[in-house]
Image (tube, rainbow, N blue to C red):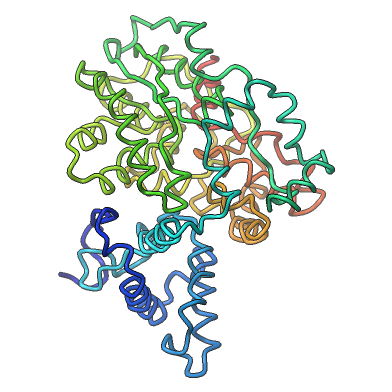
Length: 447
């Protein structure tokens, strides 16, 4: 073992099926062990609000040590964690295989799992996590759903804030009446047989967000893949379970993982690759599912066959070469690298993909947007989410690029909100939408 985490970080499986995982005395002891190490290090003070909250608790205690902090005060630290994984992946010098064995995000997850087991997950957060139900219902009347959720609709948004705790200022995802799976079925993609990568086959896991909220992401990915000779099929059994993971509902995540794997693995057995359109979902499939179900060989096989969308395009470029026809987009691109893409430990694939566009003006922003899934839209956390994401918003505004993009659609909308909050001048220049980089890549092909 070498000091400073010079070895590649490793993660232990989550022992969520072991009753000891939910032992509150053992959990408190582990929280105190980890928090004491964090207090002595403080390297993560500027990553998110969890660490300032922890350090403030310690500094305000009578002895300015963790021993003086009450255990009931730890919840404020846990609640501020968005499970972005950046402390584990980029900052902490004490992650495994270091003897200190720190995994701060998964410790926060264990705390939430205990809360969930005790029935303490708030009702509104449970409803927000039911993405498939919400998407199907909204698809029946998307105009009404989008009207009610618009920040311009002060009556409904103020009502939502008072009754559900959803901040009236927070941008909420729009819904579509024509989900991606349905659109893909109606409009087959013509595969370019002259492309260098012709012969590849990939099944696109639509993800709940691309299916119900932003089908343009899926349509763009499908068009780019077809231009590059890749035959595709679009599949969507159910949500990957990331919203459930955020709440500590690990049993629910495991159920979703098994159901999706049962649908996708037959494609893998036929030699097809698997592409996830949103980085949070790719992270779940490639890393979190195997840690939640470490003994399930099918889960492990699916993980090895799964690609994030930009990762797959870069793989084509490296191995076969891309189809010609890419042209740079006028005005340049400011690209935000999503935390859950960075946590996949695959490199900045979205940046690599956009740099494949000849002569493209590109500025890369590597910092957390602060959104954190459903966390950032809640009144209790929205101001904190904007504060954490302000450096990203400021950098994007100063870049003065025509396009502001993010691998995470929720992060993209949050960045634009942060840009508008900087002042009238910045608000006037803020784009109306932050597309997924695959959408910009499709535009570069003229698709």
